[in-house]
Image (cartoon, rainbow, N blue to C red; front, top):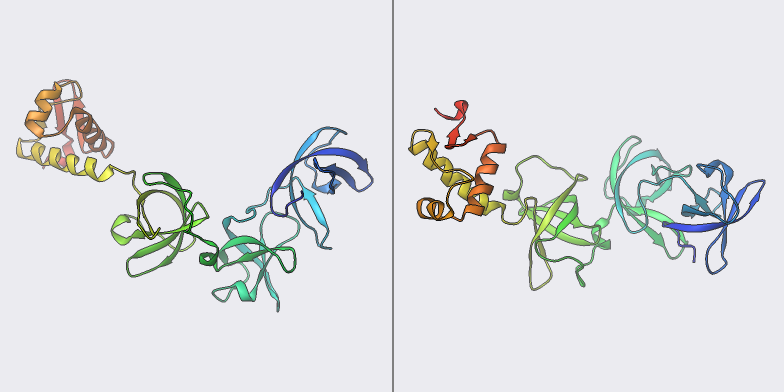
Length: 281
């Protein structure tokens, strides 16, 4: 079955004056125009192509790589505005249509907009929508707590920012989780912090367990400053001594001093750890 908006691997059935006729396992055929083939193909070989409709609404294959695929999210640029809607650059020869009814703000040429690509069942066309939230569903979840996920930043709320998780689910990152400025349309990675009973999802930008390491790093920093800038403990110290003096495991201690070292707060030497010169005052 040829599914619009997806990549498919098809076999070359024959070559024509217009390009290559590709066939899928169940017999359906599609044209790969010669100007959309990135290399010469031979009969019988497989080609990975993207399936879409050309300017005459014919199902077509291309070896170009689009910036967005079916049921995914991407930040695209507006190329043209017409009375019917906007047309977006998605990396193919035919621009992607964004109807006025699927826009959330007034757009101009050159604007960037975050959209979801879906297949309109009434017209059998690939269409973009800025109303991303209506495509997100938390009824059945495909993520687990502590899992690393892809995030798109959506709208700002009183609590934080709503996000799209893996392009499938909606989640929330609280304001106190942010240490840099973010805005609508930013893409980043995060971690599932909590899944509530009603399937609402709390997301964090830091690996789970980071807060514990940060608090231990703060404790070590306090001890360093209190002891004049040095502490005779290091990554080869006895675990029992570390636990007795700092009330933490050696594993946590090593993670904490590693964090302080990466932030250029301490030096790690054979006889202990020392505050760097700029942090010793």
